[in-house]
Length: 243
Image 1: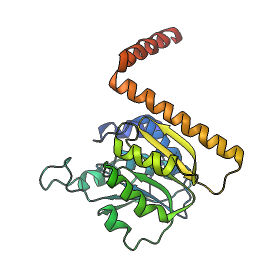
Image 2: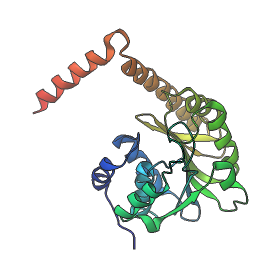
Image 3: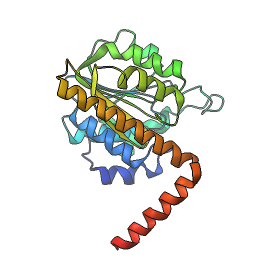
């Protein structure tokens, strides 16, 4: 029996889960997972200790009920020391959230997991190797399994060159994707068929808006020309006005 959780509940649950994933992008994943076709799987590449996995599973349970497949070798990479494994922490966090039954944990690399894969994928979440070659490899391996209308989301776009370049070249630069959404450093889009000229104009407009958001995000992150400080001052003043 799995637990149905609202985004507010998930926010509280993941506070104690190690990871680098914010609440706004969590809500984006939650919505994507909720709308995912249960005839296909929600595939997560890179689980770490389950912060994004919990958002995905909670959204799926609150929505149409697609099953989450969480893929991670749980060993290696510069983020783990020696023989450290994050599998036990992932399983414990899913169990604490009441979502263990909604997630199939696969301890493998992306390449190993896709070997012999036969199910359609209704949502592909890529948060594994952040190099350009690694992010591109994950997309190349799993893109052939995407169902019509499936969503693809990448973490750490805008601020990491690898995921951003892959998303910009292969997703934003392709007429096979539309319905662009973004939050914090997560970017998402949906597979589509042939678009009308109006739909293509809307797609191009969304791509331009996403690019403008990325410029603002990087300016804030780097505090270019004092942008971060100015924005924080204006945001605080607005908050005081609304009190």
